[in-house]
Length: 360
Length: 247
Image (cartoon, rainbow over all chains, first blue to last red; front, side, top):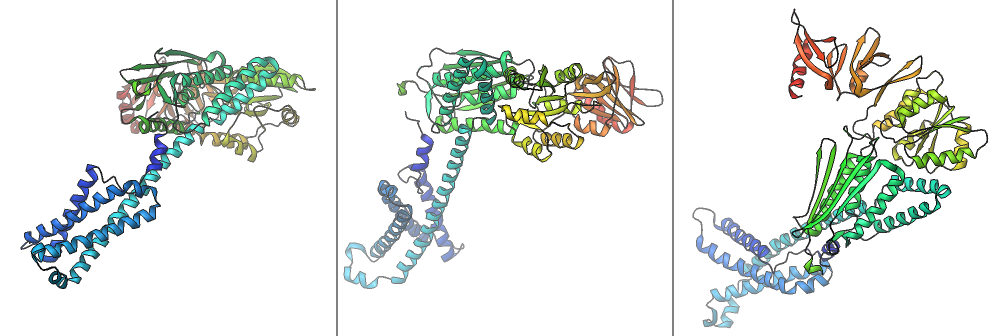
């Protein structure tokens, strides 16, 4: 169940600070600190002559402050994630200021002679203005960086929730056309063939139940295929002989899963943009094959020579893009959705990595 | 009243048929599966009312209504649709008769009792509404009124349109018909299929065979399966040549 609801978890777990226990963010912080040191030295002594000695001292100071702050924030992370965001930000900010203060004092002490010097004499020589300056710089820069992280996190959350909303919209969207057509079928059949009418009601209920399910839910691929068969059964009542479907489903799929309603929209596209506008109809070929850790789905359908008059190309494309995005969100970059058009044939491929063993 | 029902879905036709059979004063005279079939059946049964589904493969309901309007006494039309967020507003605003599927018995009776003919304004509004919905929508057939009723020519069969004074003729595989449309309108509707070769002619790209120079430096276009060739005006020559190289 490792990927179940990965998306919603990602949103919930989102924290405005990058994970400072890992390499890359720390590396970037070190880099920023070094640049800051250069700026400080440049502004104090200019370019010619560049004060290398001062750069060394400033670098040591800023790196100490940055690395120790990062280390402490890393340790505090589990705690910070639990408390309110504004409190977490305030605490991190205070931590940075205290860190600056401690290291400013330590630096003065070292410069005054360290353990060899007389401690009381050192206390008397502490330069208040220097320490205040360090605190101001630390406060301003630290504030800027925090602010940057917060804004960036907001942006990320926004993007994620937009993605989620699109997925939601896609999933809950059973075409209104389909609903009303199905109702019409039921109305027709009630008089002439009540048993088939009953079956349509059952199939329709299954489809709606599925569409109301939680976003990103994985189900057994065989269940998705059953759902698609029910869907096709309803459409076959409507389109009659015009709609034929050939299924080529691997027998070894019992342990493979798929995000619910991944295949069904592809079938829907094939029917609405392929079969329905064709006077003679045609055959949709569906294949589902699991090979070398990849699940491959393929839907092939005929399409009219000129683009369907009622082809909602826009929404169609969006539906496909959304499926692609959802697969990538769940299974990583290897997952993809491709479409191809050869004359009067339309092909849709979906492939995503799926490890059976870990799912057993 | 004599009613013709036109829907590509058999179950939908059956249901309407069942509803009409139960009604007094109305009689189902026939069923049609698509637009072209509808026009045939209208000629055959001369119904008073046509119940016309909008979305059908091949010729759809809107286009069928367009062609039917050319009759001297066209039948009244009631559109049937399952769900059309765009069209419904146009229906309401222009007082076009329509029914929503699944059709209710009393609604059908009500609609049949005062179904009216579509007028030109209503038709144009509908066509506009539907053309706004898709990226490119064009008719599948060109129609002309003939002594037999309405003559339909599939657009795919048309070799060229030629304008002569007031009239435009559409040349097809088996002859030609006079139509009351302008080349400009045709060009904007079928711009992907036909290319302008002269002020007075649009030619089907599909049937273009070659260009030849006549004495005097005039260019003429030859079309597959036709003996006559058409004059190409100077300003269209280079574009036409490029087009033919791509074919």
